[in-house]
Amino acid sequence: MQPGNEPSFRQSVDLMFNRAVALMDLPPGLEEKIRVCNATYKVRFGVRLRGQIETFVGYRSVHSEHMEPVKGGIRFSLGVNQDEVEALAALMTYKCALVEAPFGGSKGGLCVDPGQYDEHEMELITRRFAYELIKRDLINPSQNVPAPDMGTGEREMAWIADQYARMNTTDINARACVTGKPPHAGGIAGRVEATGRGVQYALQEYFRHPEDVAKSGLSGSLDGKRVIVQGLGNVGYHAASFLSAEDGCKITAIIERDGALVDERGLDVEAVHHWIAKHGGVTGYADATHVADGAKVLENDCDILIPAAMEGVINLTNAAKIKASLIIEAANGPVTAGADDVLREKGVVIIPDMFANGGGVTVSYFEWVKNLSHIRFGRMQRRQEEARHQLVVDELERLSASSGTGWTLSPDFKEKYLRGADELELVRSGLDDTMRAAYQSMREVWHSRDDVDDLRVSAYLVAIGRVAASYKAKGL
Ligand code: NAD
Image (spheres, rainbow, N blue to C red):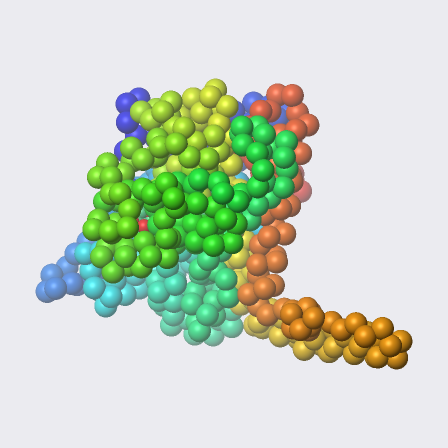
């Protein structure tokens, strides 16, 4: 899909990797060992649908097994190919290292347009693909743990988990074979929103550092910032929803497959999301201007651009025309290596994908741990925490009464303070902490090295350094 002479997605990831390793002093050969994809499995399988057998092509690529299990989503899209899954698997290795999720990198994909099949047909296709991967241990709680990606969600993950359980009836950890499951099938609170929530936490952390904000020519807080979002799917919707409802951002454009909606006063994200769910696209939505050439809207004036759809959308054909001074890569690989050069030259700050969308794998990690420990987070501590807080409140109220000062605790404070954290709050807390720590690790490199002037190379330096350390510890 790359226009002109641009490298493929995988080559683009490799070029960015190379830019970083050129600044490192790795032992001979280790650079190549880390860069290359260990293995890619390609499978063709048939499913009987509508009276005839249809053949599907799927992939599962394992980029690095320096830690196991390896982890990475499964994508359902007609565009899936080997180059793409290998690029995405490589990004998973670096992403897991950066957000300190103890996994190697993997990715899967199936060439299918989910819109062309009904639910029962999709279940047959998904289960059959899962069967092919499970019997080769390419889905396994201790070796390879998929998650949702473009075109897949809780529904598909529940089918995959059930398929694994049927084929491994005595595996007590069967549920940990896949993450992103619905809560009633072993999922965790906050996983659906996690990647978009992570994008919000990433931006919040960036805006905590005025020197960093100044590098993008912006100032102040997120409040009032004009934001363009491409792709109102899982990641884009949650990011746009949280940023507008909780941080005061104005979503001035939403770009979808069938065009873009533009409103400089700020779009109603929930209303647009509802419209898309009902009508399958943005066309016909009345409360905004519809622009048929959606991709062109990436070039509109705004403060923050959030590509949250797919790879390669900012490339050599439009990079020079991008007006945003801050881009946060919610999608994987939305900026090609060539476009990255152009944008850096222009002084645009890019918050790179391996950090920006790391919230998904972070909460997947929490879900995997929950499945292995067979207990919900907070179940043991919550009431004990509430009881201890009650002691403090009782004591404060006793002191107030006995001293005659007459002061009282506000009902709002009491309600918040007395309530012990539930699973969702714990997940959000762990995610926020992870995003802050990962940003700090990139930032330290960004500010401390004269030969580094962007966050992407900083992210690669941190991630590759950690993978290299892990190989060294193994004696390789
Ligand atoms: P999704 O299928 O839920 O949503 C993708 C959205 O983008 C859809 O609304 C689709 O209509 C739209 N879209 C697709 N092509 C488009 C185009 N050319 N122009 C405009 N809109 C387009 O997928 P998702 O899970 O939100 O994933 C989006 C991106 O985020 C992908 O790059 C994926 O790899 C990445 N990502 C997802 C997760 C996750 O947890 N789901 C985690 C990390 C990274």
